[in-house]
Image (tube, rainbow, N blue to C red; front, side, top):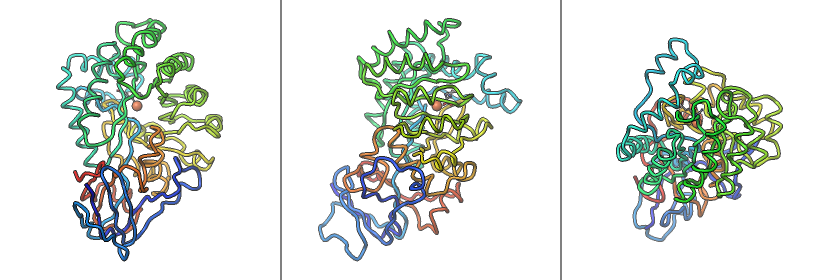
Length: 411
Ligand code: NIG
Ligand code: FE
């Protein structure tokens, strides 16, 4: 099977260097080719070039982009899309002035979602999650990470992770699973956080690993949730079972999560709404990708991460949606990139690099995803003709996507 896309107005996001991430000043550039074609073979990108050098071989099928642009699919390295129902009640509480922490302390928040998930059969959970998958695919996402963390008991954590496995097997996009048993202390362990942490380490991690249900491990390392010491204990145990770490850090306070993540060579530290200069320094020289989730700051009305400071310090930052029922009920990566430009002063090119190559890197997958590169997975979308790259985040609600190709297949 091969697919030739011709008459591409602008081929965007080309990388011929094979780099796994793009950092600092270099984030401002995006390589492009005007008036181009692109050829896939099987699930991969085979070749591309200018229209005057169209390949002579006959492909299995041809697609005319009619002057529209071709961009690499978004990579969303942080979501919680397997959840039951929705949480508008808390949305109203927030409107009436309660903070995220107050809502959580009143038994809302993550525990509320855990109760609902417990009462929802696995098939129904899968059905609801697949609706969200269809939604993010239609908005241009081609690679997504999905966390557990709304189970908080062994059985319910396994239930979510099995749903994620079913999504992996059936969805057209690529999926990675993260075990987030330490998202909050499960109800049965109320007041016994230490015992819950031991339960996560001694019972949950081995059970998850026995079924090969997770690729990564995560901990909510923040004020009122888990400490850096508990985080270290959990991710060390995860590492013993081959799980790389991705950490929720510094959403509610400077939590020590960044430092513990860097020390343990985490793939990423995510959120970063509360960041001091020391945390930025801690990230310099490490391979850990600082990942920002501006949809969460937008929804909660909290401060945005200091993206400019991080990029100007030479870091390779990533963007992700955090799609979840409590703090970011949307998986629209284009809107995330718009927020990055509007609220965090990232240029459109920086936001595109952060939501493609660098977010693939935050899943350890930038070898195969995140740019238009010969040999990488053929994950891309074709837009209508656009006036400029800046138009994409600028006209953030104007529909632009006309065709989507995932793993070489037209959707
Ligand atoms: O990434 N911060 C922790 N976890 C989620 C929110 C979970 C919830 O409120 O349901 C987040 O924002
Ligand atoms: Fe999250």
